[in-house]
Image (tube, rainbow, N blue to C red; front, side, top):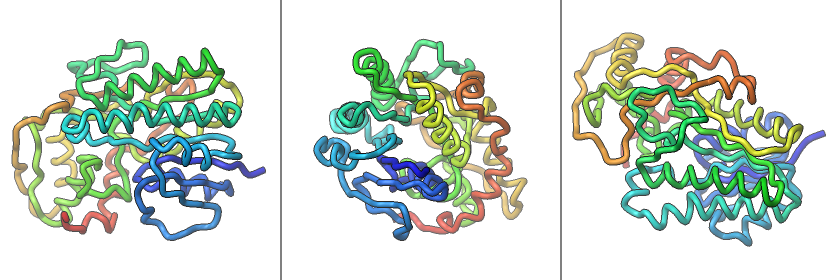
Length: 313
């Protein structure tokens, strides 16, 4: 029997991949987003242009769904710093609206996008879920708050939820001109356009890069678990491996050949984390995800993305 889902932020990079995956499974999907969806209309997918801060519109879109995938957010750390209160109203208060609307629909389960930003800069530590949160940006602080509210909703109202602490997500369909995009999308575009990479900081900062298809698999697995075992929990979604930006730049040069250009360096940006690497133990236990797409394989797929030829607007 097919299911009905609401995907907030479904016009975005991760949300778009998730929406297409759910529709491919034969399910009906309502996408709620303030942006216009790039994809052509497809069977089983309905688009509602609305803001998650509009509780009435959110509640209307949620009528009759079996579960909610919540990805709508302002993930631009620089913009969250510059427009702190506005970003908070989306990232925290908007998420509270999602939980409230889900509770009003009888407590339908919510799988929401949290972030590795909750850990802050751990100076090379492997980030596991029992570490105390130490966010260094308003974006990370809001994600911590959402996790605490999710647990409170479970204790008070019995609302099932799973927060997925996403590490650095990349893959096809990620707009390299967008401030939300992974540095990998920007590096791959530069390779396609024969341009040098720009690195903020010394390039020794490390990231745990996870392919978007693995992230989609995590969302689907989390919802399946919540429907079978209602509770509230959080889990990393990562590979357990980290690589420096300088090494990524070298991998792209070696793997794809052509002229090698030395990167250009700029001062490190406020809110950026120096090192990031996740522990996969809880992810394996709760979601069963194994053998993620390797960085080299993922980069090979990404370099074929036609979006990489797009010039900045």
